[in-house]
Image (cartoon, rainbow, N blue to C red; front, side, top):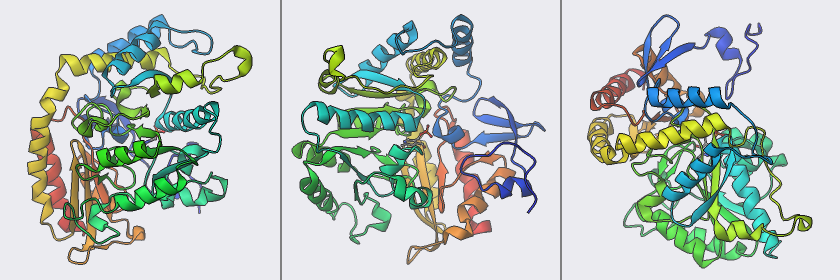
Length: 441
Ligand SMILES: Cc1ncc(COP(=O)(O)O)c(C=O)c1O
């Protein structure tokens, strides 16, 4: 096999593939579109990996980034500070679910998750409950690709290779209603699946440092939308068994599900919350882990006690990232994004109905601007396509030729357009998919 010419080793990529068909090179972004070197235009149907909110080339964001880069591109938060870090922490803790009063910066979703895991673990040590060294999480959960995040993840295809390197934890079934392991349906099931979760919480309660979960939508595991009422019941169980909740809002945060944070749908107040992706409107990397005064206080002490949280990354709380995030929050306010979303989401939902009766569409799951369309070989039996068939990839390849960029998760087509998408763009996205599925499946 001839080696690819490019020196770049691409993420999540079998590198023999770009050698056969070189990657599309994106050179420009404007509005909800990306442009290749030949000037061809593509609708950004997955918001450049789930993070773009207001489109590309938004002047308010670009100006904030440029101004900050000119004033101070980077210093450090290890022993120094800068105004943006302080301002942003204040603004975010003000709008976060109640009780989240402290914020620790990092760079990506995975680092935000690592911080939460380490913080939760160390918190219990300071509280004299050192046996709490395990995490409970969902099978099919995804929290990033560093080893801690992989340990609490459950997407076998990505994670099983690394199993010998991972720390042990407790895994429970997510509420994947379309493929309910109990063969029940919602709402007549009355949340029966939570009984197994409760059993796991009860059995391990003295060993558990936290429950890490993606609230409302389990993303990379297949856009699995939790049924209404599930999250609040789960949170209640965690409280009953004294297990802190880490809400990983990396994908769901910043309006993606129709509310600023997905926890708000069910008034859940987590002990930790991870944010990244949309934090800067999808412009530059920045992440944060928010937590409560209760957790924060446990780390306070004299210098010699070494209760410090010994964790930090070089670019933690980078000033340019903070400036972008502040400008992003301003845009939410000025453009009244959250107020405009419900009507758009209803429209999107009505449009998606056009996919539901296609012979090879098994399930259409939607939470706001997060949509998963699960393709199946046979609707009646819900028989999946095998992974090797790459059915999602085939559909996406055809869509690309029609000027739409999507990236599937196995057999699930993921639709995650920018929040700034117009009604006409949402309609076209769905109509194009409707036209392509019968040609491929
Ligand atoms: C819920 C969730 N957590 C964490 C991550 C990891 O984020 P990053 O790729 O920025 O490390 C992702 C990425 O898709 C995610 O969806």
